Image 1 (cartoon, rainbow, N blue to C red):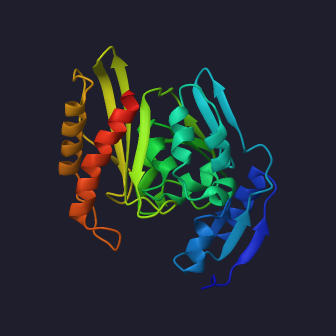
Image 2 (cartoon, rainbow, N blue to C red; image 1 turned 90 degrees about the vertical axis):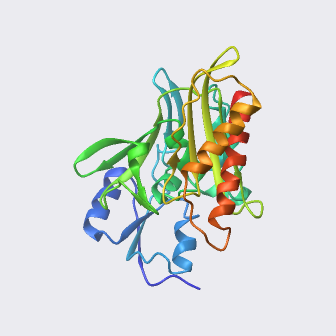
Amino acid sequence: MKPAAFTYHRAYDVNDTIAQLAELGPDAKILAGGQSLVAMMNFRLARPSALVDITRIAGLDYLERDAKGLRIGALTRHRTVETAKIDGFEVLSKAARWIGHYPIRCRGTFGGSIAHGDSTAEWCILAVLLEAQIVLQGPRGRREVPANEFFHGFFMTATEPDEMIVEVRFPKPAPHAALTEFSQRQGDFAVVAASARLDLAEKEILTSRIVLGGVGQQPYVVDVNLAGQPVNEETWRAAGESAAAQVDPPSDGHGSSAYRKKLTATLVARALAEAAA
């Protein structure tokens, strides 16, 4: 299929983008990498009246580490993150390998994935896991939204129609973090994804955080506290079973709810083991 009719517009800086979005109205969409939006348009699952192309905006493709953490510009390509060596944030480069295929990683953007709001998307899951701040800019200025408040539902986010994501900020290094997932074929969307972050002292867990994808309309934070638990397979297995008991995933052509619950238990245990390694 081909997209429904739309008008094409190019923006050359952030203020120009915001002005065009305000003029074109709420049915306009931003075109960055286009790896998700264009596919949805081709299937007519998305029918924007206009596209505002931001690919020529300079200064939004960066990875910068400072005393406050890590800053990633909205137009940073997945492949750039994959090949980066950022001490304390290795989970990002490792997780990038799960994203589609090589050509998609070379074209798709970090901010575009966050804006799209797919609950199985690696960057959405890790933004919640690592408690990132999503930086938005619009006619009312800049604002920051915590990642765990940014995703409102299936392809729904806190971004207003006249706003754009300009940056994602990760406030704290996470040397003990991991993401793993299961898909039917390499490069396909995840059926279920699991991520975990640990703070460790010797062989004991100080704090933990587990976030899932594919079990609901947005990344799901598992209610489990592993503080004081030993670093071993029994802890991982019990946490996986606890996570599976909490979720009520949907059934679709990729798997039943029961199947997703079994995947959840296995993948949570695996993510915790990888995070602790």
